[in-house]
Length: 537
Figure 1 (cartoon, rainbow, N blue to C red):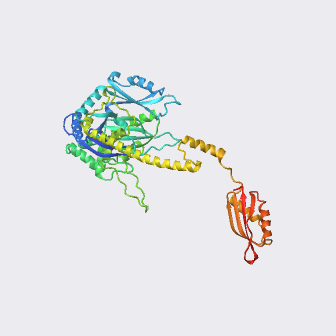
Figure 2 (figure 1 turned 30 degrees about the vertical axis):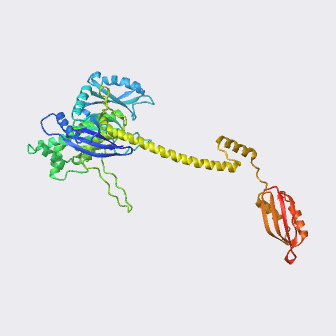
């Protein structure tokens, strides 16, 4: 029976919801929607809670909610450990992190995951690398309280920047080390950067820059002529960054490019530093950069980044390759939904929950999720009826099956009785007796193979009959049976019958030959008959 899972992305522009219907063999998107944050002077947290409350009111009943803590509330570290024992790792992770965080160890909650992509730091089979996340207990407590007040009780609290996975599988070769793909989800005020080696997220960072910077630059460049909303609309319609492959060709593009390039410098600086830090530590070559999020819609951003960073850049949600039809022409391919790139994080949260794989989860210790059985109580009567129906169906199925088996048993007993009677002369119903009799019969009682078959006797008789030049014989009836052979026919003289009898006695299988009366027929021929006792076949 399918159930629904909801992933919620607490963005700084809107709160996004991705509802998945998860069944035994399928997972499909039931709905995606968002609630825009109100634009006023209240703190961001309050505006997020209001949008969250409105969005949760639209969720289907009985859905399971999953959330992710934003990267600016977390500390992520990759620890290099000289051992790989899971119990030892659990014991030392806290002490290793104590010197790398600014808070006291008692004030934070930790979770870790051992990385399979070990990079170049481990030697031989010794040691491992552990990805560790830490968050202040008080921050997690306030976060959970706010979510519960808004009507969202999360079953898990994941780490937002670590949930991204490219849609296309990783391609690995035996000679080359596994390459890294970088997913950059550019939001309104922050950018999640996730490093994926193979199909495993090995590191992540959250940059505190996003699509808000270009919007602010356009608003300031208008000298008060544009409001914030107009600047957002202008960025969506005219936003453009020039590149070598796509230079600015109009006056508007040249002007907008000159405004947006300085605004993108802080984001670009932090992004370069993040790439350099990962490359110096993990030694995994970066293969490509995948863009997602509303901020990635800035015109020609991919070309601009390719020029600045020197790596291939493409959208995370690219259109599928067209398939060829029977006539060789490409078939029409269904593109992603127009707004799908902005729902990447919400969709990743929901799909991570649907897969059920081990992920970093901050609902630990005092925040351990405790399932509520209120829904079960509300639907107790339905469940009782369903259980009674299930029991009744099982009983009916068992009764029908028992009757069918009883009928088959009777048929098999009749066949067994007939077979044993034919084989042994009397019916035997005990399996042990039949098995013993079969073993004994095959070994001791079965008749030996005959020395000659009826075909062999026919061949021997034809060879012993004198040739037609010596005796004129016409065999009218030849009957070869077990232990007895009969020959009837006509011959030219009675003496020739004695000659034939003498010849037939030379056949090894024949024991005694009896002649019947000899009578004369037309044309002077003599009619005769021979009865032969044989010991084979």
